[in-house]
Length: 402
Image (cartoon, rainbow, N blue to C red; front, top):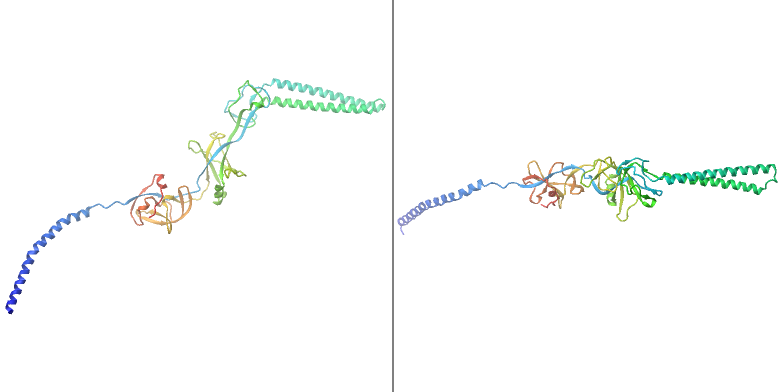
């Protein structure tokens, strides 16, 4: 092939490629335009789509408080003094000298028993005493005469007769003593016709009405109780006593209050004054006694109460609910929500536990917000919405592991 022919062929090929490129350009432009039109709205939608809100978690502030707070025990009220009044002699009961429920004084007469028979008995015993004294005086005179006669004339009276006079005097002396004892007994029995209160206190129900025949076998006529102050008796286990001593409780004063049946706390504050010297082998506990003022008589002998024991100056610590604490291989930690609503993982040192609370000895400050619900879903550095937990139940749920 000649050079001229080769050049002509190359020129035709270049023209063909150029024509094809010009024809393809409008097609590519159309495809690009369609692509822009289709993807544009999607990208605009993505740009205007709202982002997800931060995760909501429940939090509680760490509180500075004492874990050595109240301890509750079941106790029973016992009057400081309680006296059951009974008849000590037999007779008919006279008019009642009190109103049931009255406050009475020591020595106040509450019941009387018909005195007439006992007055008559006393008069009889006094008469017998007078006779015995007269006999004694006569015996003394007889002895004196016998001795004088013996001194004047030793043969006028024998020694045996003088000894007999001495014995008569001794018998008369014994009779006087016996009569005096009878008078004393009659006087005592007469005094028993007045049944008096031996203490200051409040008198209870009368078990026997006036006019009935009473005797020592009749039983209790009424009771008088001294109710201010009152004793509160409650059992404490050996374990509780040991924990109290180990924590230095023996060096701190305790106050005692009681919770009444309606859940209210009685205003008066008492103190513990006695620990029983014996352990009950059935319960492994010891009885503790507390004294409590009872000025308004709200506490009654035999009443069951809840005893609340509290230290007067308990040590305070930063505390959080147990539900806020989680543990991994590196130790215990809590999740804290800072002022920017960001989650922080805080390593802590645990202290004393009490109920649903635990003390934090190190790693946390008072008033910092700890997550008590939702720990499973958070990570350090995550933004969250903190909601203050108001339900005690939320703090009882277990903390999850991250």
